[in-house]
Image (cartoon, rainbow, N blue to C red):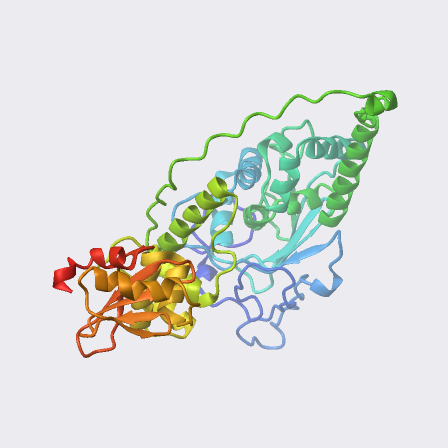
Length: 478
Protein backbone atom coordinates (compact mmCIF):
# COMPACT_ATOMS: atom_id res chain seq x y z
CA UNK A 1 0.00 0.00 0.00
CA UNK A 2 1.56 3.39 -0.90
CA UNK A 3 2.23 5.60 2.08
CA UNK A 4 0.13 8.70 2.70
CA UNK A 5 2.41 11.52 3.73
CA UNK A 6 1.77 15.03 4.89
CA UNK A 7 3.83 16.55 2.13
CA UNK A 8 1.97 18.70 -0.40
CA UNK A 9 -0.34 16.42 -2.39
CA UNK A 10 0.67 16.13 -6.03
CA UNK A 11 -1.68 13.28 -6.83
CA UNK A 12 -4.27 11.25 -4.99
CA UNK A 13 -2.63 9.01 -2.43
CA UNK A 14 -3.76 5.87 -0.61
CA UNK A 15 -5.01 5.85 2.96
CA UNK A 16 -2.65 6.83 5.75
CA UNK A 17 -0.50 3.91 6.87
CA UNK A 18 -0.58 5.18 10.42
CA UNK A 19 -4.34 4.57 10.57
CA UNK A 20 -3.47 0.93 11.34
CA UNK A 21 -0.97 1.87 14.05
CA UNK A 22 -1.68 2.24 17.75
CA UNK A 23 -2.58 5.89 18.52
CA UNK A 24 -0.02 7.84 20.57
CA UNK A 25 -0.32 7.75 24.35
CA UNK A 26 -2.78 10.34 25.69
CA UNK A 27 -4.80 10.49 22.48
CA UNK A 28 -6.88 7.38 23.17
CA UNK A 29 -10.44 7.82 22.10
CA UNK A 30 -12.97 8.78 24.76
CA UNK A 31 -16.76 9.26 24.62
CA UNK A 32 -18.21 12.69 24.01
CA UNK A 33 -18.66 14.71 27.18
CA UNK A 34 -17.84 18.14 28.56
CA UNK A 35 -14.93 18.77 30.85
CA UNK A 36 -12.37 16.09 29.88
CA UNK A 37 -9.04 15.65 31.56
CA UNK A 38 -6.32 17.29 29.54
CA UNK A 39 -4.78 14.60 27.31
CA UNK A 40 -1.09 14.58 26.42
CA UNK A 41 0.58 13.56 23.21
CA UNK A 42 3.68 11.36 23.47
CA UNK A 43 5.02 8.93 20.85
CA UNK A 44 4.58 5.20 21.38
CA UNK A 45 8.20 4.42 20.52
CA UNK A 46 11.37 5.91 21.90
CA UNK A 47 13.56 7.32 19.12
CA UNK A 48 17.15 8.14 19.69
CA UNK A 49 17.80 11.54 21.30
CA UNK A 50 18.85 12.98 17.97
CA UNK A 51 15.59 11.87 16.36
CA UNK A 52 13.16 12.75 19.18
CA UNK A 53 10.86 15.54 18.00
CA UNK A 54 9.27 17.95 20.41
CA UNK A 55 5.64 16.83 20.77
CA UNK A 56 3.35 19.73 21.76
CA UNK A 57 0.85 19.23 24.54
CA UNK A 58 -2.82 19.00 23.66
CA UNK A 59 -4.60 22.32 23.63
CA UNK A 60 -7.41 20.64 25.62
CA UNK A 61 -7.44 22.64 28.87
CA UNK A 62 -10.88 22.32 30.52
CA UNK A 63 -9.70 24.31 33.55
CA UNK A 64 -9.44 27.34 31.25
CA UNK A 65 -12.98 26.99 29.88
CA UNK A 66 -15.30 29.96 30.26
CA UNK A 67 -18.60 31.07 28.80
CA UNK A 68 -16.79 31.86 25.54
CA UNK A 69 -14.34 28.91 25.55
CA UNK A 70 -15.47 25.30 25.53
CA UNK A 71 -13.28 22.19 25.26
CA UNK A 72 -14.64 18.87 23.97
CA UNK A 73 -12.84 15.52 24.27
CA UNK A 74 -11.76 13.53 21.25
CA UNK A 75 -14.42 11.42 19.57
CA UNK A 76 -13.91 7.65 19.44
CA UNK A 77 -13.31 6.01 16.06
CA UNK A 78 -16.41 5.82 13.94
CA UNK A 79 -17.79 2.65 12.34
CA UNK A 80 -17.47 2.85 8.55
CA UNK A 81 -21.18 2.20 7.99
CA UNK A 82 -21.42 4.30 4.84
CA UNK A 83 -23.95 6.74 6.34
CA UNK A 84 -23.59 10.49 6.40
CA UNK A 85 -21.00 11.90 8.77
CA UNK A 86 -23.54 14.17 10.50
CA UNK A 87 -27.01 13.22 11.73
CA UNK A 88 -28.83 16.54 12.24
CA UNK A 89 -29.89 18.78 9.41
CA UNK A 90 -27.71 21.63 10.72
CA UNK A 91 -24.71 19.27 11.06
CA UNK A 92 -25.21 18.21 7.45
CA UNK A 93 -25.43 21.89 6.44
CA UNK A 94 -21.98 22.40 8.01
CA UNK A 95 -20.62 19.40 6.07
CA UNK A 96 -22.20 20.73 2.87
CA UNK A 97 -20.46 24.12 3.35
CA UNK A 98 -17.14 22.30 3.77
CA UNK A 99 -17.54 20.02 0.76
CA UNK A 100 -18.95 22.66 -1.59
CA UNK A 101 -16.07 25.03 -0.81
CA UNK A 102 -13.32 22.37 -1.13
CA UNK A 103 -11.00 22.31 -4.13
CA UNK A 104 -9.94 18.65 -3.95
CA UNK A 105 -12.37 15.80 -3.28
CA UNK A 106 -9.50 13.40 -2.54
CA UNK A 107 -8.28 15.52 0.35
CA UNK A 108 -11.86 15.54 1.73
CA UNK A 109 -11.97 11.76 1.46
CA UNK A 110 -8.71 11.36 3.38
CA UNK A 111 -9.84 13.94 5.95
CA UNK A 112 -13.07 11.99 6.44
CA UNK A 113 -10.95 8.87 7.01
CA UNK A 114 -8.77 10.70 9.55
CA UNK A 115 -11.89 11.84 11.43
CA UNK A 116 -13.49 8.41 11.35
CA UNK A 117 -10.31 6.76 12.64
CA UNK A 118 -10.08 9.11 15.63
CA UNK A 119 -7.04 11.14 14.56
CA UNK A 120 -8.53 14.42 15.85
CA UNK A 121 -7.58 15.33 19.40
CA UNK A 122 -9.74 17.32 21.83
CA UNK A 123 -11.46 20.28 20.18
CA UNK A 124 -11.57 23.81 21.61
CA UNK A 125 -14.27 26.22 20.40
CA UNK A 126 -14.14 29.98 20.88
CA UNK A 127 -15.99 32.78 19.02
CA UNK A 128 -14.99 32.53 15.37
CA UNK A 129 -12.48 29.71 15.88
CA UNK A 130 -12.23 25.90 16.18
CA UNK A 131 -8.84 24.48 17.21
CA UNK A 132 -7.45 20.94 17.59
CA UNK A 133 -4.34 18.83 17.04
CA UNK A 134 -4.70 16.26 14.24
CA UNK A 135 -2.35 13.29 13.86
CA UNK A 136 -1.05 12.59 10.41
CA UNK A 137 1.72 10.31 9.13
CA UNK A 138 4.45 12.03 11.19
CA UNK A 139 4.94 11.57 14.96
CA UNK A 140 4.29 15.23 15.62
CA UNK A 141 0.57 16.14 15.29
CA UNK A 142 -0.43 19.24 13.36
CA UNK A 143 -2.09 22.27 14.83
CA UNK A 144 -5.30 22.92 12.90
CA UNK A 145 -7.80 25.75 13.15
CA UNK A 146 -10.96 26.63 11.25
CA UNK A 147 -12.18 30.20 11.31
CA UNK A 148 -15.76 31.43 10.85
CA UNK A 149 -16.95 35.04 10.85
CA UNK A 150 -18.76 36.12 14.02
CA UNK A 151 -22.07 37.96 13.86
CA UNK A 152 -22.49 41.64 14.60
CA UNK A 153 -24.81 43.18 17.19
CA UNK A 154 -27.54 43.88 14.64
CA UNK A 155 -27.50 40.25 13.52
CA UNK A 156 -27.82 39.08 17.12
CA UNK A 157 -30.73 41.46 17.72
CA UNK A 158 -32.58 39.95 14.75
CA UNK A 159 -31.79 36.43 15.97
CA UNK A 160 -33.05 37.15 19.51
CA UNK A 161 -36.22 38.78 18.15
CA UNK A 162 -36.91 35.74 15.97
CA UNK A 163 -36.26 33.31 18.85
CA UNK A 164 -38.48 35.24 21.27
CA UNK A 165 -41.34 35.50 18.75
CA UNK A 166 -42.13 31.81 19.15
CA UNK A 167 -41.83 30.00 22.50
CA UNK A 168 -41.19 26.80 20.57
CA UNK A 169 -37.84 28.18 19.40
CA UNK A 170 -36.53 28.54 22.95
CA UNK A 171 -37.87 25.12 23.92
CA UNK A 172 -36.17 23.55 20.91
CA UNK A 173 -32.82 25.15 21.75
CA UNK A 174 -33.06 23.88 25.32
CA UNK A 175 -33.68 20.41 23.86
CA UNK A 176 -30.50 20.81 21.79
CA UNK A 177 -32.42 21.24 18.54
CA UNK A 178 -32.06 23.94 15.90
CA UNK A 179 -35.44 24.81 14.30
CA UNK A 180 -35.23 25.45 10.57
CA UNK A 181 -37.47 28.50 10.93
CA UNK A 182 -34.97 30.00 13.39
CA UNK A 183 -32.00 29.26 11.13
CA UNK A 184 -33.87 30.94 8.24
CA UNK A 185 -34.68 34.15 10.16
CA UNK A 186 -32.40 36.29 7.97
CA UNK A 187 -29.30 35.85 10.12
CA UNK A 188 -26.47 33.76 8.54
CA UNK A 189 -26.09 31.21 11.34
CA UNK A 190 -24.99 28.31 9.17
CA UNK A 191 -21.92 28.74 6.97
CA UNK A 192 -22.12 28.71 3.21
CA UNK A 193 -19.56 27.53 0.63
CA UNK A 194 -16.30 29.39 1.21
CA UNK A 195 -17.25 30.68 4.70
CA UNK A 196 -15.00 28.17 6.48
CA UNK A 197 -11.35 29.28 6.58
CA UNK A 198 -9.07 26.33 7.48
CA UNK A 199 -5.43 26.69 8.50
CA UNK A 200 -2.96 23.91 9.32
CA UNK A 201 0.70 23.70 10.33
CA UNK A 202 1.33 20.93 7.77
CA UNK A 203 3.19 21.75 4.51
CA UNK A 204 0.12 20.90 2.39
CA UNK A 205 -1.44 24.08 0.99
CA UNK A 206 -4.63 22.44 -0.24
CA UNK A 207 -7.96 24.06 0.53
CA UNK A 208 -8.58 22.38 2.83
CA UNK A 209 -5.82 19.93 3.67
CA UNK A 210 -6.84 16.53 4.97
CA UNK A 211 -6.12 17.54 8.60
CA UNK A 212 -8.38 20.61 8.40
CA UNK A 213 -11.05 18.52 6.65
CA UNK A 214 -10.87 15.98 9.50
CA UNK A 215 -11.40 18.75 12.05
CA UNK A 216 -14.38 20.09 10.09
CA UNK A 217 -16.00 16.66 9.96
CA UNK A 218 -15.56 16.20 13.71
CA UNK A 219 -16.98 19.70 14.30
CA UNK A 220 -20.14 18.57 12.50
CA UNK A 221 -20.50 15.85 15.13
CA UNK A 222 -20.17 18.52 17.84
CA UNK A 223 -22.97 20.49 16.21
CA UNK A 224 -25.14 17.34 16.14
CA UNK A 225 -24.86 17.05 19.91
CA UNK A 226 -25.24 20.74 20.78
CA UNK A 227 -26.32 23.53 18.38
CA UNK A 228 -25.07 26.08 20.93
CA UNK A 229 -21.59 25.23 19.61
CA UNK A 230 -22.60 26.90 16.35
CA UNK A 231 -23.89 29.95 18.24
CA UNK A 232 -20.62 30.12 20.19
CA UNK A 233 -18.69 30.04 16.92
CA UNK A 234 -20.81 32.97 15.76
CA UNK A 235 -19.85 34.94 18.87
CA UNK A 236 -22.28 34.34 21.77
CA UNK A 237 -22.17 31.82 24.63
CA UNK A 238 -25.09 29.66 25.71
CA UNK A 239 -25.76 31.34 29.09
CA UNK A 240 -25.52 34.82 27.60
CA UNK A 241 -28.06 33.91 24.90
CA UNK A 242 -30.50 32.26 27.31
CA UNK A 243 -30.33 35.22 29.70
CA UNK A 244 -30.95 37.63 26.84
CA UNK A 245 -33.91 35.58 25.60
CA UNK A 246 -35.34 35.47 29.13
CA UNK A 247 -35.08 39.25 29.53
CA UNK A 248 -36.54 39.87 26.09
CA UNK A 249 -39.49 37.55 26.68
CA UNK A 250 -40.23 39.18 30.05
CA UNK A 251 -40.02 42.65 28.53
CA UNK A 252 -42.38 41.72 25.72
CA UNK A 253 -44.87 40.17 28.14
CA UNK A 254 -44.83 43.25 30.37
CA UNK A 255 -45.24 45.57 27.38
CA UNK A 256 -48.15 43.50 26.06
CA UNK A 257 -49.85 43.56 29.46
CA UNK A 258 -49.35 47.33 29.69
CA UNK A 259 -50.78 47.86 26.22
CA UNK A 260 -53.86 45.82 27.04
CA UNK A 261 -54.52 47.77 30.23
CA UNK A 262 -56.64 46.53 33.11
CA UNK A 263 -59.85 44.80 32.13
CA UNK A 264 -62.96 46.71 33.19
CA UNK A 265 -64.50 45.23 36.29
CA UNK A 266 -68.20 44.37 36.13
CA UNK A 267 -70.29 46.45 38.47
CA UNK A 268 -73.82 47.32 39.56
CA UNK A 269 -75.16 50.71 40.52
CA UNK A 270 -75.68 51.09 44.27
CA UNK A 271 -79.27 52.22 43.76
CA UNK A 272 -80.05 49.08 41.80
CA UNK A 273 -78.69 46.93 44.62
CA UNK A 274 -81.00 48.35 47.32
CA UNK A 275 -84.04 48.77 45.06
CA UNK A 276 -86.89 46.34 45.90
CA UNK A 277 -87.42 43.71 43.30
CA UNK A 278 -89.40 40.53 42.96
CA UNK A 279 -87.47 37.39 42.23
CA UNK A 280 -88.96 34.81 39.90
CA UNK A 281 -90.18 31.64 41.58
CA UNK A 282 -87.86 28.71 41.71
CA UNK A 283 -88.55 25.96 39.19
CA UNK A 284 -90.36 22.90 40.42
CA UNK A 285 -88.00 20.11 41.50
CA UNK A 286 -87.59 17.23 39.15
CA UNK A 287 -89.49 14.09 40.11
CA UNK A 288 -87.31 11.49 41.82
CA UNK A 289 -86.53 8.33 39.88
CA UNK A 290 -88.79 5.41 40.73
CA UNK A 291 -85.87 3.33 42.01
CA UNK A 292 -82.07 3.52 42.22
CA UNK A 293 -80.25 2.32 39.15
CA UNK A 294 -77.74 -0.51 39.04
CA UNK A 295 -74.06 0.48 39.03
CA UNK A 296 -71.84 -0.35 36.06
CA UNK A 297 -69.69 -3.45 35.99
CA UNK A 298 -66.28 -2.87 37.54
CA UNK A 299 -63.37 -4.74 35.90
CA UNK A 300 -60.85 -6.51 38.06
CA UNK A 301 -57.32 -5.08 37.94
CA UNK A 302 -54.16 -6.56 39.52
CA UNK A 303 -53.50 -4.71 42.76
CA UNK A 304 -56.77 -2.78 42.44
CA UNK A 305 -59.86 -2.83 44.67
CA UNK A 306 -62.17 -5.82 44.73
CA UNK A 307 -64.81 -5.30 41.99
CA UNK A 308 -67.38 -7.13 44.12
CA UNK A 309 -66.80 -4.71 47.01
CA UNK A 310 -67.01 -1.73 44.65
CA UNK A 311 -70.31 -3.01 43.27
CA UNK A 312 -71.65 -3.48 46.81
CA UNK A 313 -70.66 0.02 47.92
CA UNK A 314 -71.99 1.67 44.74
CA UNK A 315 -75.32 -0.16 45.03
CA UNK A 316 -75.66 0.87 48.67
CA UNK A 317 -74.74 4.51 47.94
CA UNK A 318 -77.39 4.66 45.20
CA UNK A 319 -80.02 3.20 47.55
CA UNK A 320 -79.18 5.66 50.33
CA UNK A 321 -79.22 8.59 47.91
CA UNK A 322 -82.63 7.51 46.59
CA UNK A 323 -84.03 7.21 50.11
CA UNK A 324 -82.68 10.63 51.07
CA UNK A 325 -84.12 12.15 47.91
CA UNK A 326 -87.60 10.67 48.36
CA UNK A 327 -87.97 10.87 52.17
CA UNK A 328 -85.63 13.69 53.15
CA UNK A 329 -83.75 11.60 55.72
CA UNK A 330 -80.90 9.16 55.75
CA UNK A 331 -81.95 5.84 57.27
CA UNK A 332 -78.34 4.89 57.93
CA UNK A 333 -77.15 7.96 59.79
CA UNK A 334 -77.70 6.66 63.35
CA UNK A 335 -76.70 3.02 62.87
CA UNK A 336 -73.90 1.35 64.82
CA UNK A 337 -71.04 -0.43 63.08
CA UNK A 338 -72.73 -3.80 63.59
CA UNK A 339 -76.12 -2.54 62.41
CA UNK A 340 -74.56 -1.02 59.30
CA UNK A 341 -72.69 -4.25 58.56
CA UNK A 342 -75.99 -6.17 58.83
CA UNK A 343 -77.71 -3.62 56.60
CA UNK A 344 -75.00 -3.88 53.93
CA UNK A 345 -75.16 -7.67 53.92
CA UNK A 346 -78.98 -7.66 53.82
CA UNK A 347 -78.95 -5.28 50.85
CA UNK A 348 -77.21 -7.90 48.74
CA UNK A 349 -79.89 -9.42 46.52
CA UNK A 350 -80.63 -13.14 46.75
CA UNK A 351 -80.87 -15.53 49.64
CA UNK A 352 -78.43 -18.29 48.69
CA UNK A 353 -74.82 -18.35 49.79
CA UNK A 354 -72.57 -17.92 46.78
CA UNK A 355 -68.80 -17.46 46.69
CA UNK A 356 -69.27 -13.70 46.48
CA UNK A 357 -71.79 -13.66 49.34
CA UNK A 358 -69.49 -15.73 51.56
CA UNK A 359 -66.64 -13.32 50.90
CA UNK A 360 -68.88 -10.34 51.71
CA UNK A 361 -70.21 -11.94 54.93
CA UNK A 362 -66.71 -12.89 56.05
CA UNK A 363 -65.36 -9.37 55.45
CA UNK A 364 -68.27 -7.59 57.16
CA UNK A 365 -68.39 -10.00 60.12
CA UNK A 366 -64.63 -9.64 60.68
CA UNK A 367 -64.90 -5.84 60.63
CA UNK A 368 -67.70 -5.94 63.24
CA UNK A 369 -66.04 -8.57 65.44
CA UNK A 370 -68.70 -11.22 64.78
CA UNK A 371 -68.85 -14.58 62.99
CA UNK A 372 -70.37 -15.14 59.54
CA UNK A 373 -73.10 -17.34 61.06
CA UNK A 374 -74.09 -14.56 63.48
CA UNK A 375 -74.19 -12.16 60.56
CA UNK A 376 -76.38 -14.53 58.51
CA UNK A 377 -78.92 -14.79 61.36
CA UNK A 378 -78.88 -11.01 61.80
CA UNK A 379 -79.45 -10.53 58.04
CA UNK A 380 -82.56 -12.72 58.26
CA UNK A 381 -83.85 -10.57 61.16
CA UNK A 382 -83.09 -7.35 59.25
CA UNK A 383 -84.94 -8.58 56.20
CA UNK A 384 -87.85 -9.50 58.47
CA UNK A 385 -88.20 -6.14 60.18
CA UNK A 386 -85.26 -3.80 59.57
CA UNK A 387 -83.54 -2.27 62.62
CA UNK A 388 -86.48 -3.24 64.85
CA UNK A 389 -86.27 -6.81 63.63
CA UNK A 390 -82.56 -6.90 64.54
CA UNK A 391 -83.37 -5.52 68.01
CA UNK A 392 -86.03 -8.25 68.49
CA UNK A 393 -83.37 -10.87 67.64
CA UNK A 394 -80.68 -9.56 69.96
CA UNK A 395 -82.38 -7.60 72.79
CA UNK A 396 -84.93 -9.41 75.00
CA UNK A 397 -87.03 -6.99 77.08
CA UNK A 398 -89.88 -6.99 79.58
CA UNK A 399 -93.07 -5.69 77.98
CA UNK A 400 -95.69 -3.97 80.12
CA UNK A 401 -99.04 -5.63 80.85
CA UNK A 402 -101.51 -5.42 78.01
CA UNK A 403 -100.73 -6.63 74.53
CA UNK A 404 -98.33 -9.35 75.65
CA UNK A 405 -100.82 -10.74 78.21
CA UNK A 406 -103.64 -10.81 75.66
CA UNK A 407 -101.60 -12.86 73.18
CA UNK A 408 -101.91 -16.20 74.99
CA UNK A 409 -105.75 -16.23 75.08
CA UNK A 410 -105.77 -15.32 71.38
CA UNK A 411 -103.52 -18.27 70.60
CA UNK A 412 -105.68 -20.64 72.68
CA UNK A 413 -108.77 -19.40 70.86
CA UNK A 414 -107.09 -20.36 67.59
CA UNK A 415 -106.78 -23.98 68.83
CA UNK A 416 -103.10 -23.55 69.55
CA UNK A 417 -101.47 -24.99 72.68
CA UNK A 418 -100.46 -22.81 75.59
CA UNK A 419 -97.23 -21.00 74.70
CA UNK A 420 -94.62 -20.63 77.45
CA UNK A 421 -93.87 -16.95 78.28
CA UNK A 422 -90.38 -15.57 78.97
CA UNK A 423 -89.84 -11.84 78.92
CA UNK A 424 -91.07 -10.76 75.42
CA UNK A 425 -90.96 -14.35 74.04
CA UNK A 426 -93.84 -16.87 73.72
CA UNK A 427 -92.55 -20.37 72.86
CA UNK A 428 -94.53 -23.37 71.58
CA UNK A 429 -94.51 -26.21 74.14
CA UNK A 430 -92.84 -28.46 71.59
CA UNK A 431 -90.05 -25.86 71.18
CA UNK A 432 -90.14 -25.40 67.40
CA UNK A 433 -92.13 -22.12 67.04
CA UNK A 434 -91.68 -18.87 68.91
CA UNK A 435 -93.27 -15.40 68.92
CA UNK A 436 -91.38 -12.26 69.99
CA UNK A 437 -92.99 -8.92 70.71
CA UNK A 438 -91.12 -5.91 69.42
CA UNK A 439 -91.05 -2.37 70.75
CA UNK A 440 -93.10 -1.41 67.72
CA UNK A 441 -96.03 -3.59 68.92
CA UNK A 442 -95.56 -6.19 66.17
CA UNK A 443 -95.17 -9.92 66.69
CA UNK A 444 -92.17 -11.58 65.04
CA UNK A 445 -92.22 -15.33 64.36
CA UNK A 446 -89.17 -17.58 64.83
CA UNK A 447 -88.51 -21.25 64.10
CA UNK A 448 -86.05 -23.82 65.47
CA UNK A 449 -85.41 -27.50 65.38
CA UNK A 450 -87.27 -29.16 68.32
CA UNK A 451 -85.01 -29.48 71.31
CA UNK A 452 -82.52 -26.87 70.00
CA UNK A 453 -82.24 -23.21 70.88
CA UNK A 454 -81.38 -22.23 67.29
CA UNK A 455 -84.03 -19.63 66.55
CA UNK A 456 -84.21 -18.06 63.08
CA UNK A 457 -86.62 -15.30 62.02
CA UNK A 458 -89.46 -16.49 59.77
CA UNK A 459 -92.47 -14.91 58.13
CA UNK A 460 -93.78 -11.35 58.26
CA UNK A 461 -94.33 -9.31 61.46
CA UNK A 462 -98.00 -8.78 62.36
CA UNK A 463 -100.05 -6.98 65.02
CA UNK A 464 -101.94 -10.23 65.59
CA UNK A 465 -99.88 -13.09 67.07
CA UNK A 466 -101.97 -15.64 65.17
CA UNK A 467 -101.41 -13.69 61.96
CA UNK A 468 -97.62 -13.72 62.53
CA UNK A 469 -97.79 -17.54 62.66
CA UNK A 470 -99.96 -17.84 59.52
CA UNK A 471 -97.00 -17.76 57.20
CA UNK A 472 -95.44 -20.72 59.00
CA UNK A 473 -98.41 -23.08 58.46
CA UNK A 474 -102.04 -23.54 59.44
CA UNK A 475 -102.79 -23.70 63.22
CA UNK A 476 -103.42 -27.45 63.06
CA UNK A 477 -99.84 -27.96 61.85
CA UNK A 478 -98.49 -26.08 64.86
